[in-house]
Image 1 (tube, rainbow, N blue to C red):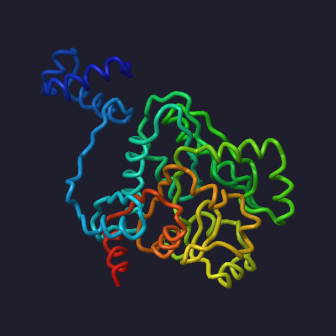
Image 2: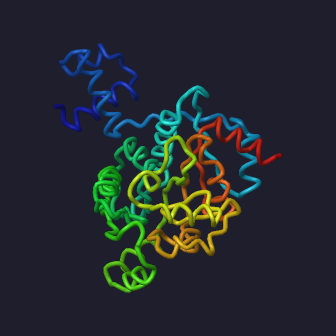
Length: 317
């Protein structure tokens, strides 16, 4: 395995000096196939970052419609319309990972919500050499059937590894059985420490949970909610959640009983985070996206272009 210095050298010869692979192979006294592998490895490690600038007029109607209505920045990810929701999510996750790499800098703290969307994003993170950063878990992951360590822990590890960050776990259940238990736990010093870190975030990164999507959030397909919980959500008119805190299509979240037992950050806390990146893939979560936007929970949306186009069209009707 070549050293980092050798990878830097090969990348510089190819991308900066614009030598051919054959010329680089002669310079490094190796084979052309080895040079190709070294360049691929350099991209994988983040030594080489390739960015394609989208034209400033890329679908301006869609961007302007969403921005004007909700005061947010939309980042469109071009995808073919025939892709499945799973493949669309993978493309959008890759775009999200690149956007996060542009905005997450040394000295910052990042809050992440566990789930299908963030799992996908974590697979596309490119290493970035940062210092004094923290990655903070936004909501608990334990259920009646599992500790949740596997669900949230691997996501935290991937983000922390990519950015050289300290990781801050939130070792509480996704939902308490009783609101009084939550109130008592929120007084514990170990829990208060994580809650305070959540109030100091520079960036929050999250998907939107929705039972309507072809790629349902983990909270909707694991042992987190029982039949009474689902009935209560339906009765309250819930369309989705962010970090296991539920809301309606108009953005309201008051009077939803399950929120009193949820461990995600309350929306007042979330709104105070300077950059709040919401990841949306596929039309199955658009009603939930509308609710999150109405609630003022989002500053940036990363969304596939066909879904964004459909959403902007609906806003005008």
